[in-house]
Image 1 (cartoon, rainbow, N blue to C red):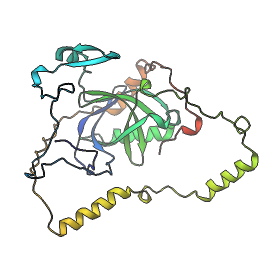
Image 2 (tube, rainbow, N blue to C red):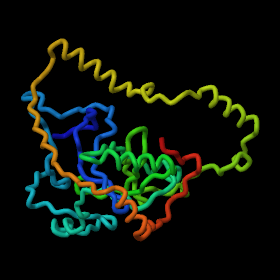
Image 3 (spheres, one colour):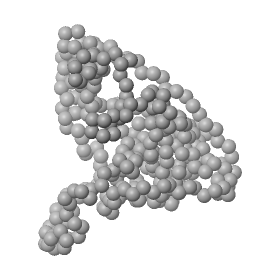
Image 4 (tube, rainbow, N blue to C red):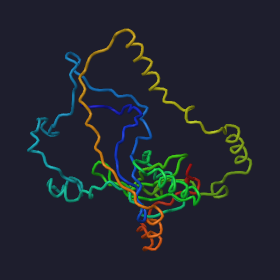
Amino acid sequence: MNREKGLAPTSTRTLWKGAISFGLVHIPVGLYTATRDTGIDFDWLDKHSMEPVGYRRINKATGKEMAAGDIVKGVEYEDGRYVILTPEEIASAFPKLTQTIEIEAFVDADEIPLIYLERPYYTAPLARGQKVYALLREALLKTGKVGVAKVVIQAKQHLAVLMPCGRALVLNLLRWGGEIRSFEQLDLPPLGIQASRITANELNMAVKLIEDQTQTWNADVFRNSFAEEIHKLINTKVKAGEVREVPKPESPAPGSTGAEIIDLTALLKRSLKGPRTKKMAAKPVAKVPAASKRRSA
């Protein structure tokens, strides 16, 4: 079914079960959606039969529909020139499927620029993981650190940061270093008021304007007005009985996995005696001004 960007309801359904791992310590956790899209789903339907309308495999040059067996996957590496990959070659490149949020290093919370943050998920302890979950959370809060980790979700490897947020540990997926474009090619004004030819009076007025409009952060104040108006229209039509039946596919039941915890004190001692956490390979990325940096909640 073809679907435009839409609204995903908030759910406490476990999306993924596994463990947070650092040193020799494993914390069994579940992963839960921390956001919802405030857009609107517009499904494509046949206006006469109300049957869902989906994408078709169409040859863009001839306009003819293609059989699945006649389609191969190619990657364009030069303009108009492709490398064809077989399903076996693609499968061999998939990351190893694990159920572990493997923390590779701890960094200061304000070292990760906002531009790298992509999608947050809540984690929550499973089985007997309450105490060690709380221990990691409190240790991160005390040190002002966050954990940089790798995790595989739905056969795709992600870079992520594990950070304390209130009583929860939030796993925020990050963009890889190579995905952030440099801003050096853009025509941007230089840093500093003198270099940018800003007068002291202009700066003072701008600062006063910002201070006059400063308020305490409250996410509930900011709403998607388009979505709210559409929902009003939907509710009006529902009350008027203007509803059509469209069959929906059933969602598959989530899988189940678990992890055990052995003596926490012993694991911590063994982790401290073992080799130091390996350094992450540094890749040159675009420098981001200090103002773009953040501190964890």
